[in-house]
Image (cartoon, rainbow, N blue to C red; front, side):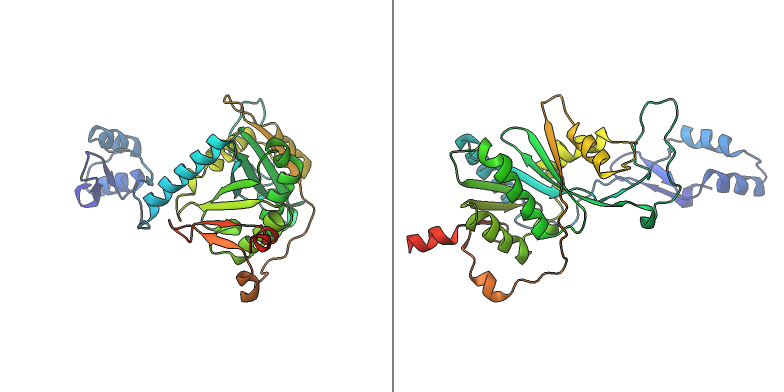
Length: 311
């Protein structure tokens, strides 16, 4: 009966069936063999069947320069760290609705927190947009929680605020900065606004020489911020409703790890507008040098004032 519905892995003994235990039990009764679903379960187990979900183990189509980019990022990162120059990994964490909503995870307690039975945005105090900066040199995390849109302007504002208040104190003798980020989103390699804001806010106003290395599409899990900062934050607030922005900031700032991670959190009240366009003239005015290796993913932006002095 199960043979026509059996699938399996050609590289192992793993097998599965399409029908549920109840359906198999009913079909057994129709064929003169009254068996309960639990009996069917025991028989399937003896036949080496088990209850399994999908396993994300197969990689899709990969960019031909994927491995070259990984090697390039690692070599560039090593040069900066050995020289004592700042290396930061950046990304936007999953947006969170603020209010009495369920937060995934479980914790030890005597009584579970009562939360809303539906996640309606109309019941939310607001929506949090956490943009994270992870300092690889010092194992420190900084999260800027916005309250409007996840835009390139918000991303670069966060980096600029970090440099003004913390970065220049941590790295007083350098004007070079390496940014590691994903290939898409508010800091994606295709974003014109991302590059234009880096030019204006970091290179021109702060005098930084900004080098950016993007991880290839579909490889964000290797971006250090994902497992060194965002992962511990999610564990720290697991099963704890984010009932207010202050509550969220407190959970972020109290995140630590056995390797010495410390985190600071800041609330951003500025409103950001989606859909801003950067004209061709503004892009042509950028002092942007693409690297010879994967030039779309690796580039350095220089201050326009220093470039003018050189010419």
